[in-house]
Image 1: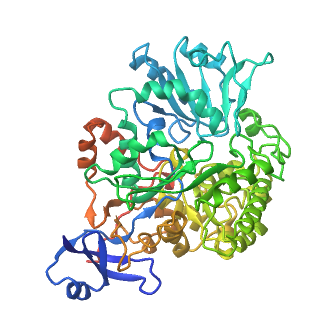
Image 2: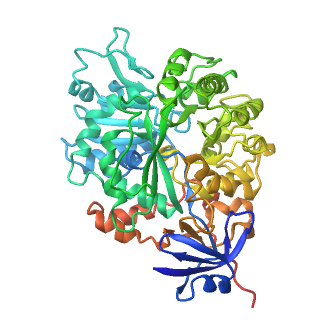
Length: 582
């Protein structure tokens, strides 16, 4: 169907024509952008659809996420206990008690979002959880996604009370002095292994895709039209195919296969069109999470009440938190570089980043990829040093960055976790743009809620959730921040020929906003109301998507929409376009 979509203004992210009034769409693709008359000339018979928006932008792109797993972890029947919903450990305990009261005593329970730093409590062991839940299968995921905590019943279900396993490559289990498991696991291979009995029980429920559908709705409601799965494994394929083929499916998905899976280098085939679902690369983990205390840093963690409450040991971690030796990294890159996959490395600390860039440089040279458009990626890089960005650029490495790290944890990073010289400039946006590493922004799935507009606000203002400005020299311009959430995100995912800007030939993926970001105060950008999205020129109907799934009832859908943007703008009401002068 041909149509022309209009708005008060269109921000195209195309530097050749940054603003427009209308977009002409034929089928799924844009054929003209400009004044209404120009678009009518391109499609004379097309209907004109007024979006009702103050501003249309390319659909937001979250370059690093985990939609299905995030939905399973955070949405009903799971409970989301992240710090923006449960600021203290007492709040977490209140949710635990509510879950016990409102569920059958035999049902497994899953919670997501424990954060020792923000909730000021040490990691819960099986002994602690047993006192609360008794002989019940219970899983608590750490908010970083790098840790999990379970009851003794889970350990028994795995048979690991009698035969504790060795630590997997890239992860480790917490243990008692005699070597038995204590209910804690750190890093993805160990955390997922310990979580398996509870996740399997939930997945076997009557509505196994309920959480995934709800998380798709949550991401779309935030204005996102394209995202990624950075912890893909083959058993998730059916879920992603099912979601992609539902009416009004709101998200295009790019897959990155976990390097710990034996088939991670295998080709990907699907009946779903590659514009909706495609495999792009391989995901690897170099170090851990800043909030757990296991990132490979040259600067010391401080000894403060905050770090002591979270059980983070003071001092320099150095190379100790690395999940792989350098030789193991080299072997992994050698095994898959020739297959043509884009490599994506989770790394937060500066020492970890040095090691990853060393490994990249050797592998790129060895496999004849130096100087090519390989777009190998580094994820998060919160603790990166100034000098490392120019090296990334020289290697052709692109950076996927997380403004949420600075927004939610910035007040702790600056002076409570690290010295101000390290914590205040955490997430060095200015350095990334100046070096030309095509920085994109993400929310990392359930590690923080999907909040692209809040990401943009944070990059422009350098304000934390308390409203405090830290590291202002690392602020971006609004144009740069918008690029990071649109065209740079497409560049990171390798789909910039199809998405990320409003240009003729590209897919008509759009987000409608109630205000032009350039017309509101920078500290209120995160509160701009999202009015809806289009995918391939079709306005997304989230009610139709949810209904077609057969997984979500009206009450659950209303609860998802009521989540809002936690921690945004000090509870400023959603910003709409200014009223016209009388």
